[in-house]
Image (cartoon, rainbow, N blue to C red):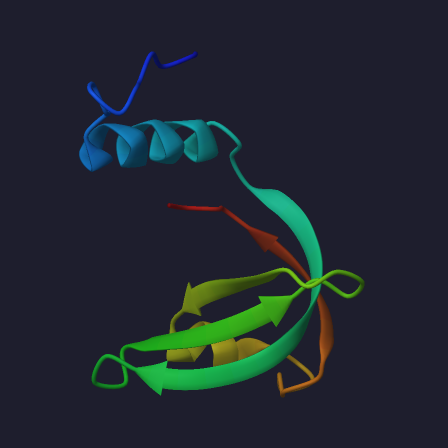
Length: 91
């Protein structure tokens, strides 16, 4: 879908955000390879934020999981670990 926008008729941010969300949601779960660069527990110990970067390019994403899911990973996940994960991208 192509949007017709211009300086005089810009698209609202909510519309762009919604379109990106919908496109990514259609992908479904995917297998992804990367390297862990940071693990942080936040949200009153209810969420773990993990930064994962591409092993060859300067591309980083943030993954969110539960402390229980992280604790189940064997061997324990740590900074620098190269991982393959099955994840559902969200925007």
